[in-house]
Image (cartoon, rainbow, N blue to C red; front, side, top):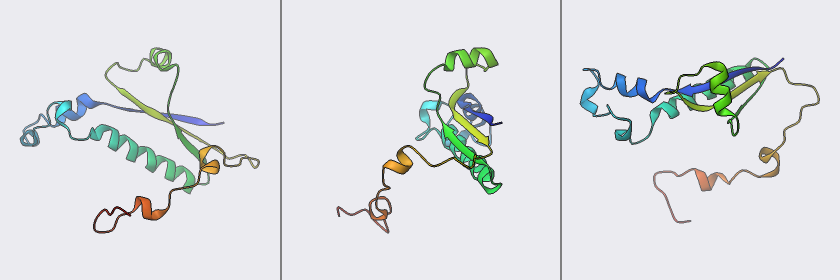
Length: 124
């Protein structure tokens, strides 16, 4: 039976932490001041670690977003209004008949030269 981990983040917790004396010098007390919303970055990294740990243990795992029904889910689970939904991690045992599908199969990866830049970007 699959298990689910709902991934949420709390921008208020980040700004509250950066309002404290040892962090206030960075000027990140307001969410709008962050050049990148690190609460999403950290949630993504934590999700990746959970996915990798599941795979390392021989489980199937996947990450997906909630495209429909988030309001109902929030109400049913009593999720506080300030938390931002990032996605869901599904974890379970792979069925012997499971095969990769979707864009991972139908769409080739971009060549490494398009996504990796050494020392500087080039036009080529």
